Image (cartoon, rainbow, N blue to C red; front, side, top):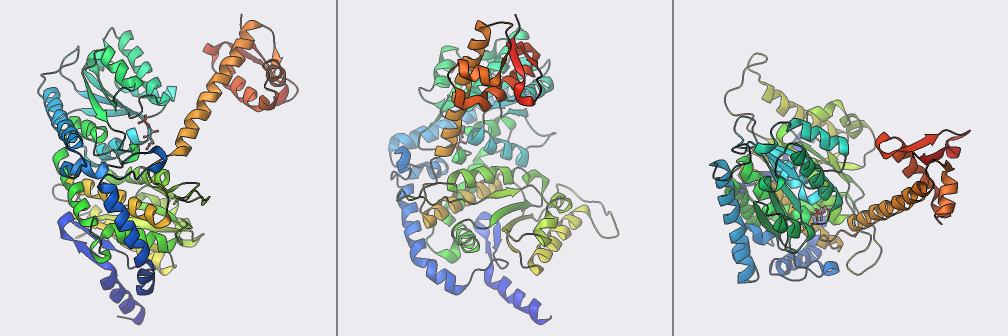
Length: 532
Ligand code: PA5
């Protein structure tokens, strides 16, 4: 062993830890942690641990929204701060189990027979978790229902999903998920799907379930329309930490995934990562490694590289969990900090033929999070070369890339799990929820609100109101042509000409909106009219 390799082996032994209770190993040897850094961070971490204890005990850990933060109670209801909350959680899980059984056994059927498909409509925290788990644990030959998602208000995307389900809507169960019950993307998806059922001469309400907050617009609608069932979402569960609430559990149970094991994995991980001892707590170690790498300011991006196709949505899921939680303008003392941690990724080895070139040789502004899954597949593998399988290659590409990055001074964390199962997926979800909780405490931000998301929702609503004004003006002068600047002047919005320009071009590109565009001498002189 040469000098460099023997040093690395020493470091590996120092920073590699196996956690048998959750079937996971963590290797931080390729990060820059040191005894001095860990000692310097100890007081901050102690405060973070204390804050997590208070959070789990039901403190108002989301002060901006004056809410408790209770996703940890979902996998261990005995920790809930009140007997009522405990009961609600237990009833939710029991209700999901019995509803899924009724669907699988054909006790509840669609208008054309037993349900064969599941269509989940939701967005953000009401879609990413269910999508990740469905992809990670589903199997085309074993799934009880075939799952589709509508997670956007893109008409073409909706058409694509409806085309997949053509002729099968009468055997498709729709689950509409929205905590607030008022998210427009989700509402639009629901309206479009409802219309498809109508066109097929089917009653949407006989195929529909809602997961939403009590008393929300969606809840009222589902109640009035006599939907099959309604499951709760509580204000103490955030969208991006809702995978182990009805939001994630119902779609998973309907697909045929073992939700008890999913919950058990998260519960076991919570038990481990609740410990206020850094060496015994993988979440604390990851939080510290992230802090060190980006100076507690997110100066390095996190590139998630699972070497497993089934985990390809994990990067997307983590992107929301981390960026929506940590990406904050102000800290808990209301000072402007513009915090965050940028996350991207997809999967190895595929990404080695894509952006990994830059990771290895280009700008060194990241650390990688490798996820290694030891078990290759169910059943035996064939040899693609003497004594070598495809899985050996996948493992070889992972080890090779990690080595190449390290040799070029690029940091990485490696998380190893023996196999993909509902238990280990529950572990991964809980692990990163805790990483986010602890890291947010270290940097002093509220991880549980999302003012930027709310601002985006409001800004879009303002655009829609503005578009109505434009259409109203054009319809009062049918057939008459106006430039963007003229329209803006007429509707008293001269400082919003660009918005008029963009909105009119969108309308004119869609013939059914009946807005005609006549080109002018430049793009900005185009004239718009509403066809008579
Ligand atoms: O994590 C979040 O809070 C958001 O991403 C929400 O989940 C997303 O905006 C959807 O909101 P809702 O579930 O209210 O429709």
